[in-house]
Image (cartoon, rainbow, N blue to C red; front, side):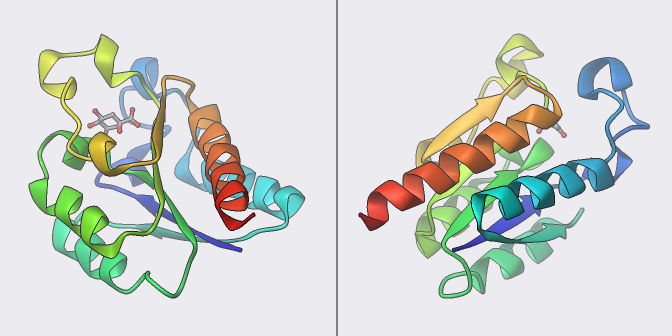
Length: 147
Ligand code: DQA
């Protein structure tokens, strides 16, 4: 089983930007923790980050047939991108949305997610662990679907 991890805009700044909101964990640390968990779960994993919406859409477009599930932190695109929502709906690869922070407890403009309605589920508010819980949930979901 193969999982594609997609990190949205500005997430390479993790560890340096607004640590009171996002914590001090870096993107490399998140990816290492995900890789270790993937090994435990017996799944393959690969990582993609871009600050460019179009690059993310191009990447998503070529994922069907390449992976079984997507773990995505769409970052700011969560709240703005109809195109991202359409791409995820269009490719039809089961997707779990994750956020380090809990957008529902932040500014009003973060209360809308265009991604949530086309995701299997969302994990938010647990810092780095949101990604780890999200990966566990996605793999459990895919295994149940495969039975
Ligand atoms: C975020 C939450 C978004 O609202 C924000 O724009 C981000 C990070 C999170 O992981 O908490 O860039 O997706």
